[in-house]
Length: 301
Image (cartoon, rainbow, N blue to C red; front, side, top):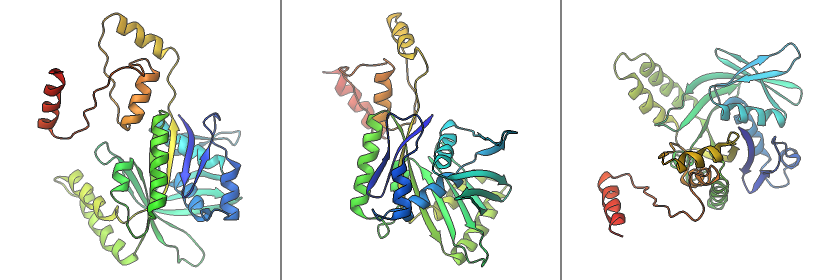
């Protein structure tokens, strides 16, 4: 997978034609502040380098190999590295990122893991500093529908949200996988109480997963949207030809995906599962009865 584009505040970055994400405009905007999104860019790159479950392995040559449970996580960490935010060390309760020739050490307080039901993951961390006055922050990444539902109305500008939503639709129509990144600064007292609840849920004997989900819901709220991203998941060689051959042989094919509808349609077209002129019936409802009624209505046409 390849990190392609991102929208940070009012500005979009990246190039569909480049193999690796490396946009000098992003670095210039971060340091110059000319578009007013410099702090957001810095926060976004920090999130890319810290909000994940990747394990770094340094080779004898000095090159860092990223071991990830999913290829999209590795793509995000590589994108941060290309912009000068290099994640290079993971300890049980620490993450170290090199930025501008200096190491930044983050105390990893909690990890709220990704699941197919949650459609998001979060880390809660505190950057270590000489004065010990660092803020406790929550970094969250996930699907647009779950992130947007958790955004603070006070912390997010409507115009900016509209631009990011437009970028998400544009990315999806090009067949890219999309993610949203959001953050929150946590009050120390509120976090302390939540941390006790989280520990209780983590050690529960009965319904542990259910309790962890409920506790996560309490803290993953009132978020500020930082950025939206696009990752390209290229088809393997000869996939369209293979699918056309299977279809010609009368074999029925189903595509199972967790992507946005627009992304799924684009991938289905590019893989020859369907064509641009194919009539599509979209059933996006969550109610079984409504879906059944629409299917019945469709068969009567």
